[in-house]
Length: 187
Ligand SMILES: CC(C)(COP(=O)(O)OP(=O)(O)OC[C@H]1O[C@@H](n2cnc3c(N)ncnc32)[C@H](O)[C@@H]1OP(=O)(O)O)[C@@H](O)C(=O)NCCC(=O)NCCS
Image (tube, rainbow, N blue to C red; front, side):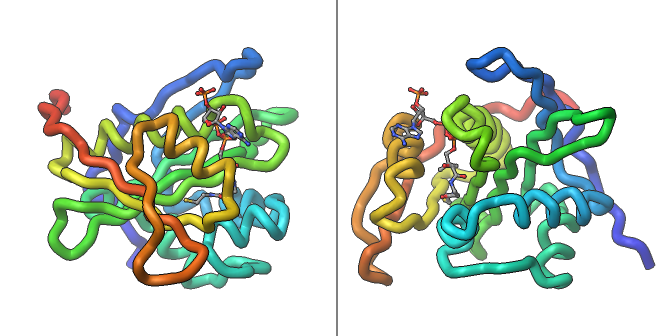
């Protein structure tokens, strides 16, 4: 049977203008976004893909694409940022979080197409994820990134994350931020 989303969080749909003025649509990921997301990850440089997944990745397996697009919006929340080129959707960024077993903390990851970096897109995507997570009862949001990933460390520092060396792996930093409880918006 085809996968069905329990509740698509339409309140996360937004149109924003980046610092350079471009119009970008931000929306929650849909099951039919497989091809768009696949094209996005293929378009990233090998370095950016490695930074995103914390290991070298050439292509996304069918199973990973399934996981990335069949998002339940309870334990897993995912956003894409897209522009329209000649009337066709092109994904230029994605961000997601997955709750840990205790549900009060969640791990996030974000990536932005190389040519769109430095325009505030990661900041926008993370801000929206954080707000949604707070409203959903997540109290701590974390991520791991390479100590050499200066861009992500800068994004995290500016967003108020605590940054410390990971106890699990050498050359890896842990990003951590407490989230204040926020009241849920009316649905
Ligand atoms: C890390 C990454 C997501 C940042 O995306 P981005 O859209 O370029 O980041 P933003 O433009 O939103 O930057 C947010 C803040 O960080 C700062 N920043 C970003 N890159 C920076 C850099 N190289 N040096 C200094 N500051 C930087 C920005 O100035 C901005 O601060 P401001 O709000 O005061 O202007 C992007 O480089 C990327 O996709 N990298 C590959 C994948 C990856 O590493 N993902 C991390 C997995 S957790």
